[in-house]
Length: 290
Image (tube, rainbow, N blue to C red):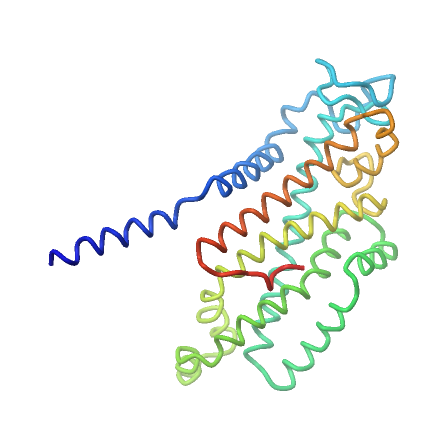
């Protein structure tokens, strides 16, 4: 009995250490929480509306009245940054949920059914993956318009193909396990096996992919905004803010730099969090990367 206690104590210490985030992990979580709070409550505290022209001059310097200066038509950059956080994060999150739900269930279904169903679905998915994401997004949005619903649906559909590949690969590893064969022997249906047996055993890597996919989709939407096919003015969006204020770089304006830094902070924080999770679990989710 005396030999068991030290081992149990050591195991408890190892588990506690594994559950504790490193300095990098805490930093990433703090950045993400900050932007979530800004998106939720910032518009109530913003000094101006996102569309208000508050200054006669464009690209004015930061001051007590305009903390980050004004943009190319005299709107407050600080206020637009706050409103842009809500637009950028909300559209990115909804599109990521669409991509994950669609890709996960189609990928798991293809792996469980196997045979001709899996072959046809996988070949179609490979064909979609062969197209560059930005090119496909440009074609769809140019044809259907650049409204927010179209932007979200397009982003979700474009990235669902990558999620499909990951979900299918995870299910292929599990479908020959004994507990899956036991469920089939009991006469359980395909959707029962997917939801009760396979999905719970793929939660961790799929959650990791969700964080990575969110960063990819935010970058994708910001790229479309920079090209003029994203969220349309006067609605504030970080990618559109960079494009609109590019001419201010010559005069040293913060108007194009601040939204670009905001995009970078979100994507870096998400990737740091994924790396932290990979180290804590001892697994590398490189397959989830774009």
